[in-house]
Structure formats: structure tokens, C-alpha cells
Length: 229
Image 1 (cartoon, helix red, strand yellow):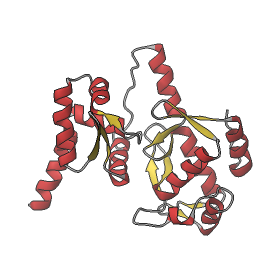
Image 2 (cartoon, one colour):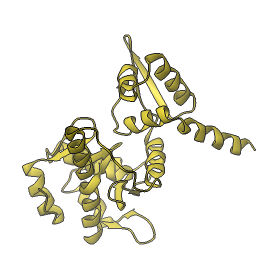
Image 3 (cartoon, helix red, strand yellow):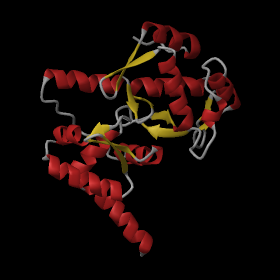
Image 4 (tube, rainbow, N blue to C red):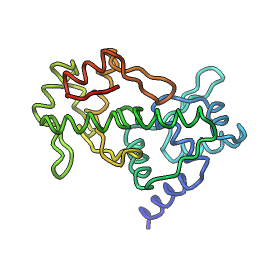
């Protein structure tokens, strides 16, 4: 019963639409202030604060106070992975943008975005497919970084070997909620995204949208045979 009660409590945290919206906003990886989240969800600041208290007590978010601001982010990669898995199980959800600008933003996110700390959208899926085709990833019965994949990340891409060690899974298949196919998550996915940013192959536009630079397009073609743009 204790585990059942704990699971019911966790489900209850996400059963409220406002708290679910807050968690999805934080899935971009950056910290938000309580005021920004209140404006994003369209509810009063006091109500948002109460929701954040419940999410913090439930272990889904953590906060840091800086001056009079209260910064909030997801509690860690394991929470992001839980949200990704739940979102992927929703199936196609009709997107009804309320303006042309919103429609364009939705299309851009579907093309390339961050999903917490790794790449998602069509870009993330194409990278994952290309890595699998080149023997850098093994997706037979799961998702594993091969020895060739480790050498590629720590060699040409300059990833520190320590980034691929630790308690977190090295490679994890995350079903993309727009493409309905897996993209690479886990420590390897985060290291890949960081390497792309460090080399100037991608840049962020807004909270989650990602754009590929001209150097990035050339690198994708040279390293993975992907024609982008």
C-alpha cells in the first residue's frame, strides 16, 4: 500500500493541468521564475506559488532563491525522462495555434528543439538514425552506445570521457512526441548536444527552439551524412 500511495501521489501531482503545464515548460531545461511561470500558465501568482510548492514537495522541481526572485527548474534528468515518456504515450494531440506566429513556432519546434538537455524533433531523430546506421548506436532490443560511438564522441567531437560515466544511463531511446520515433537521450544525448553547441553547429532561439548553423549543416553532412536545410 505504501508504494501504491506514493504512486498515486505522484500521479496526482501531474493530474492538475496547471502543474502539468509548468512541468512541460521546465522540460526545456532552463530555470524559470515563478512570475514567468504564472504568465505562461495564465493563473495568478499566488496560485502558481502554491502549485510550485506542491511540485517541490513531491520532488519534481527544485528551486533557488536569488534576491527577490524564485528560480525553478526540474529536479533532474530522471524527472525529465519521466515527463518525456508520459508525453510520448499521449499519442497525437491536435495542435491549434491561435495565430500565424504560434503556428510557425510550433513547426520550428517540430523541426529541431531541445528536450531537457538533448536534441529532439526531426533533427534529433535524424541524428539518432544516422548514428545507428553507422554503427555508433545499437538499437536492437534497446539503445546502447557502441565502442565506435564512444570513440566518435570522445575523439572528433571532443566529449570528455567522464561525461559518459555516472549513475545516469549512457544512452536511452526517448520516443519523440512529434516524430513518433526515438531520439537519443541519456548522458550521450546530453554530451552530443553540448558538443554541437560548443562547436557552433547549433544555436538556441527562444526557450527550446534550435537552429542549425551553416557550419552545422556542413558538419552533419560530413560526420553523419545528413543533409539539413
